[in-house]
Each structure stands twice: as structure tokens, then as C-alpha cells.
Length: 268
Image (cartoon, rainbow, N blue to C red; front, side, top):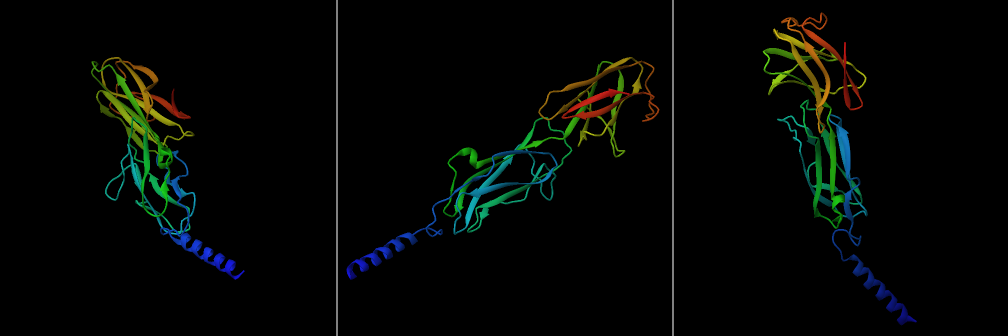
């Protein structure tokens, strides 16, 4: 009987010693690190965002995960405006006993028109410290965040063989005024943060010329084709160098509205 008890104790002792032989996690099995979601989208300028990285099992030591961030965006810093400000630096720390940590970033309003949709991509690249391993599924190691652009570019075009000077003028809800710039024969103006419940006054201003002019107003948003909104014509005697939002002399005026993501232009 004593012999059996002695053997049992020794066996137990040997088993316990074997169990303690491990890395900094003291017998806990290796954990898998991955993103909790792999894609999301937010409106440009919507501010603070975060994405969760988690372990499927807690670890008794630190887990340090290296990551890289890229995309067709401009990163902002103290000296440069941009689309995105990264708030969490690599490597990401998941503390002992915890199963998650967050990568934080901020979406900024840049008021520039982008013809292509923008996105930010975050990739978990390797484990720098700890008993965890990255998910073997590639998609679970990559997070994509699409940025929904909130700028619309209005443009005005006419027959450039006609000697005429025509501008687009947009009155904003805060009483601000935007006047178009001429780019490659097109008058262009960018409107940001177009409110779906607000109307905007758009004026086509014929300030110089002595001929009839046919014109076309169109718009574009990031990732979309140019859409024609209205067509009109000035007579040869309509030009006026004096602009007024109220008199209407030398101008054709329209009410601009946003319906869902589309713009509508209604003659006044």
C-alpha cells in the first residue's frame, strides 16, 4: 500500500514539472490573434474610429502584435493636413490576462474633391512577443475601412470657341459664397458636407460676352460618373459685370438639393 501511494505522488510530481515547462504563458495554449471585423465604412470627417484585435484565449504574458497601415489616403500629422490621423502606434500591446486591444484612428474632413473612393488598410504582420500566433486565414489579418466622400464637384461647361466669361456661384447655408475656378476649360466648384435637408442657391453668372451661350451644369462625386443636372442658354444681351444674389441680372439661378447621394438642380 505504501509503495502504491509513493508511486502516485511521484507520478503527480513529474506531471506537474512537465506542465510548468513553457514560454512566458505558463502552460496556457497558444492563442490566435485576428481582427474582430474585417471591413467597415464611415463618412469622411466622422472623427474617432477604432478596430478591435483579439485573442481567442488569454495569455499570462504580454502579446505584442506588429501592424502596418496604408491606403490611397494622406496621413495627417502636426505639420500636415490629411485624410486620416493614426492614433495608435505599432506594435499593439495586449496585456496579460486580456483578450483584446484597439487600433484607433481619426477620419478628418479635408474639403478636397477625390475622383476615386478612398480607403485605409491595416494589416497584422507578425507577433513580436508572446505565445500567440496570427490567424492562418489571410482575411482575418487585414482590416479595410472605406471612406465615404462627402464632397460634390459642380462643373459648368460651354462652347469654348465663344468669347464669354461665365462663373458658377454657390451660396452656402452659413451665408458663405463659393466661386468657381477655371480648370481646363471647365468652371469647377467643390461643395463639402452637403446637407440632405438644406437647399443651396446656385447661380450661373454671365459676366462678360456679347453672344448667345448654351451651357450645361453637371456634377460628380468620388467613384461616380459625371451626371448632367441642367442645361440653359444666355442671350447676347444678358451679360452683367455686377453680380447680385437678389436682382438676378446676368444670372440664371437654381435651387440645389441632395436626395440620398444624388444632387437635384431646380430652376428658380
